[in-house]
Length: 198
Ligand SMILES: O=C(O)CCC(=O)C(=O)O
Ligand SMILES: [Fe+2]
Image (tube, rainbow, N blue to C red):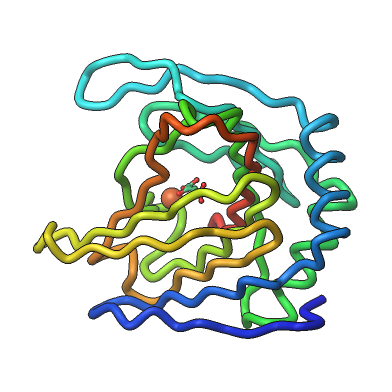
């Protein structure tokens, strides 16, 4: 899939993060964006964090090749079976990384007021050093990283339409990430995070 690819490795301690800005051709990425935006049964769940309940500031959906549920922040999601588009993208990523993904968590950020707060993808179903493959379709947004021990150690990168971000190794032990809100008038973004759920 990566026709005009290049790869950027982030130089951050105790992490293994690389970015492929041109992973999916823009025309193909437009097609995936429209198809998924219109056909995925997007849901908006209530989550609880430190005993307080909030409505999630984005829409989500879970897809998988099995029926194992995935739980985080007191939400349990039950997967739909992978559709053709997600299977195609999954195979393209698997050409690049030596991982067979079981599951994809989809996020739809409708505008700049939708967001995803600081967290690490460290649920125990993901195993010890999870490989997380994250695709961006539509509106580009900044992806912020901060070190768990030294919060002044930060980095941000703009995730482009059709890009792939890979987080591997011990990244989730030492780093958190977020998609922050912005007051700019911006369009919608779909994020696909492929994972292995055991
Ligand atoms: O939207 C993104 O790029 C990040 C999504 C994310 O961190 C997650 O779903 O765990
Ligand atoms: Fe995450």
